[in-house]
Length: 253
Length: 250
Image (cartoon, rainbow over all chains, first blue to last red; front, side, top):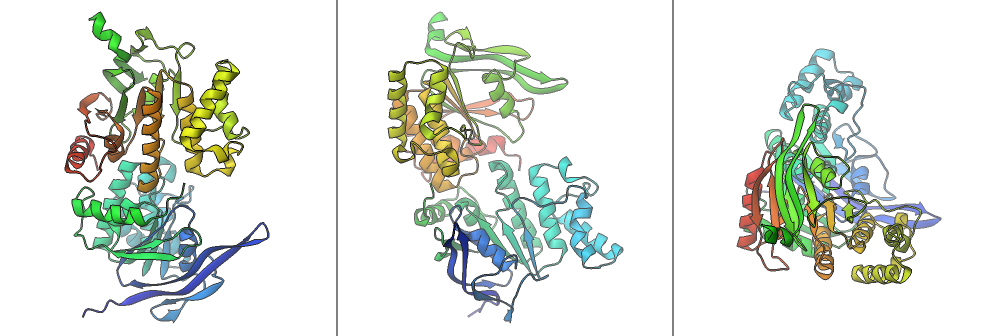
């Protein structure tokens, strides 16, 4: 049997917040394992706590209980081996594409020649060659998110976290970017944890889909998607899986 | 000739728009029958929004014109209702007051307003939100109010610009079924713009496919499938694929 290598392990993660003097649970006892070089999708309805879970993995917030392990080693707080792509881009508007992509390595103290070369590699990979000197406001929505992806890659992380990165794009640009992220991932394999509320996107991208319940987030079901890539969104099997997942998802009106 | 003219609620003739040198729309002509549901799709950035803004008279055309019941469209005379992508409810009014708002501006009598508003609230099943304010609602519910508000106007032409843009498949189908229910019940004439081809095939009686800029109508597709439509049926997938192939740029 080919045992998959476990990269990241979440053990009984729970998170709660105090809202108007009341405790509200956002994540409740989530345990899961993430395999090496896997494209894992966390799918859940709006406001179900999936971003909270991702923030915990990224070390941006501390869970009230539970533990995280990377390669068997306990994690506390943020870790340079984990990098994040945000829904709201979080690009620095006063820096060029190159400036944004090389920022992480620059802070890490990597010399200019090395970090430039590395940044260029990922700018090329995401298809922004020729836009190195452009500023974010000169780019379209899809291009800005490409910068975010290149920036995340440029820190050379082992695990990439993506928080609804295509949530603000129109349907067509979204399809284009889904194809792109798949191509990039196949070319430069990393472990990706991708959060979305879009069922079609989840089925298109995921090796596995972790379906989360309504708030507080718990693991409702895990789907293995064994369709060949690149996937076809109008293939009968694709539509069947989409329907199956859809019927099991909570409608958040 | 005059006979066929009578059938059409909306006639668009040779609609052309330039912004300076930028040629956005090129000689678009089509007709919409009373009570028809038409979807407009096209590649990103093809000028769909300009097209809508011309239909609503926010912009004036460089050439050509839009006629409603055979007369040049006039927002003072005709009822042109609009639903934007972002919920556009009035934040300091309750759900009911939002629904009443346009009708009061049109100075309808109170009884008529009560009747229409109650009808919409019951069609949407929003009785319990009647006195809520928009910020107390989810984005999808806020959008449903706006859609209800637009239908309540009994518009001559209801224009919708991707009202379900960022909503997920499951929620979208729920809301799309709701819009079809309202449309069937109220017999409105609807132009629905979307980037989402599956959505267009799910909703439309007829799809207009626009080309890249300068946009013109590339093709008209009649969707003659029974409702509610089955998105996994071969006929549905076939139409979806055909329309996608016509606009695919990615």
